[in-house]
Image (cartoon, rainbow, N blue to C red):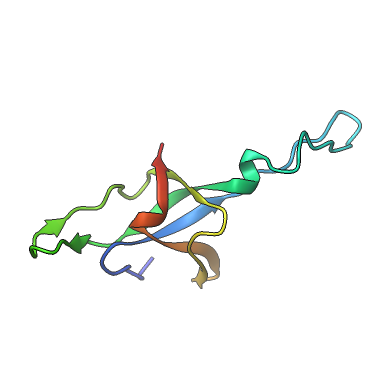
Length: 98
């Protein structure tokens, strides 16, 4: 990939989780709000160099390329690069590094 994010931005390839069906192919939800509806999981493809704090010192990123992360279901911006779909996140939108 030739695109490089700036500052504290991260390009993530979302891991799509298929809904589980029963043996007969019927999906029965357990409740209206599941973990998959609140959070998304992805693999970090590219990271920016980091940001500067108020003193002008460099603050490194919390994750690196290849890390699996979790982020909010509505976080980031959907982007398309080289015919692939990605999510562009700010470092502050990353909830968990797995």
